[in-house]
Length: 190
Ligand code: IMP
Image 1 (spheres, rainbow, N blue to C red):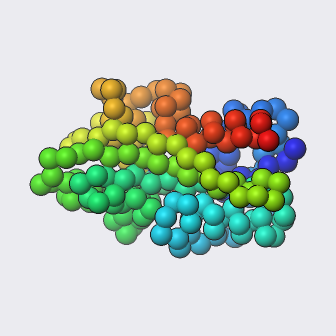
Image 2: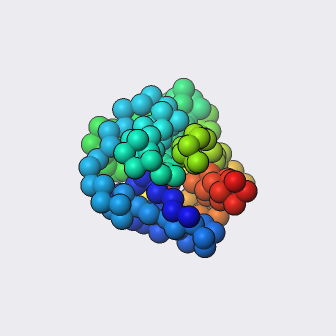
């Protein structure tokens, strides 16, 4: 069965393709010839993932999912949240981290979590699946693996940042892995 992942990011598509059941044929936006950017102008992860999945569903009428992720920091009332990618306004991860450090300078509570929401259109019905990982934001940059906020996020009961972990290790415990595992369970049972 074909399933579209409404993403242009081939790395993400390949990562998910590798863990889906073999009878699911995963197609990226490039694979289906959709080359436009879909504007993510929602105010929640649910809205943004739905905008992406629904745009493709309305055009192609096929099973499709999209994901959206954010970092939610407790003492910043959930910021940067849905705006994580463009927190500093430049779209640059180093700038985003610098802004986070500045905002957290006077805060003692460093608790934060990543959340991924997947919106799935499956057999003409809409479903939301999510994964979270809780931890804290440290006050220095550590490690060189991964991307985004990885060098400043230490998951609960781990001594290492995501950027200090082996990528396979991160991919086993991450917010995205949790949401993708629910996606796998869903498509296997439905
Ligand atoms: P996206 O929805 O997967 O594009 O993620 C939005 C933004 O959240 C990214 O641009 C990153 O800043 C941040 N982000 C998402 N996933 C991760 C992660 O696994 N580690 C660090 N930052 C992440």
